[in-house]
Length: 385
Image (tube, rainbow, N blue to C red; front, side, top):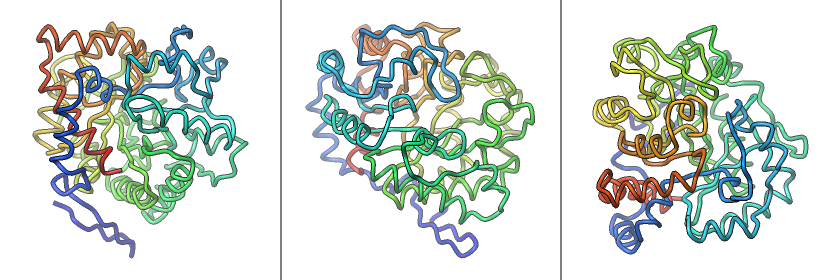
């Protein structure tokens, strides 16, 4: 197991899944025992702010920036009375902010303070990869350093540049009050026809991408931000965009081990605390067209058992077309938890998704101990922060 990575003079201290800086077991167990089922279920949902405002009705097929036109126009940028009322019955473990939720430094600071006071003690999350996916850096009201792309960093061949990128982004995210950055992209961009990953990835060569991913993670960590590698088991060899519908990789597991798994193994060995799933189908691995997000073969057999990853699995946004065009909110939410997911990100209908999980426990479809397994991981992460 990798303990220290030395790259071009840059020392990256690391930890395995067994020695992560997680909260004390006794304290986590005591907290878990005091929680109601609804409080536990709430910890498993990380949602956009709009999900708490039931006066907002939208039909969302999310674009690359996570915001369709109708959501962008709403520009929800403060917690309102409706959100407080909904949150009282539906506690939430995390809130993700998109570009349209952020106006300027003053507004963001006030909004984050309001979110901190919500029931469930939500963590603050954002997609701030650098390059074209950067909610803050691409906002002209913020004076922070911008990065061309991860591909440009990868082309330098120097992982210290990835560290600098991650640390720079992590530093301003920490200053603004965020906890988690859904970055870096650990995909290997092997398909030139790929329309969703492209230059968001460090390279089309896994041996180049892997040290970049680890260096970026270390940069975030040293700034006090928790990173998340994505999109497992690898979105780099697809043609379609899961934001809008079905996408697949035709690779076998052996082929993935030689490419995609090189970067994910590096991140796991380093000690990453979150891995985000891809909504892609992998028929030559699973024997079906089920999205990886809902596949126990991908999440349990491969990620947990074969790769040894024991920390948090979070979905990509469940409001994306690859999920919503095939499954109801209840089917998708319960299905991904049964498959092994710990955190459900961005369900299309948060209220329906929440109630579906509660009902699934009450009718025996899911056991409360299965919920406890995920909540333990989440509470340990929160304690470590």
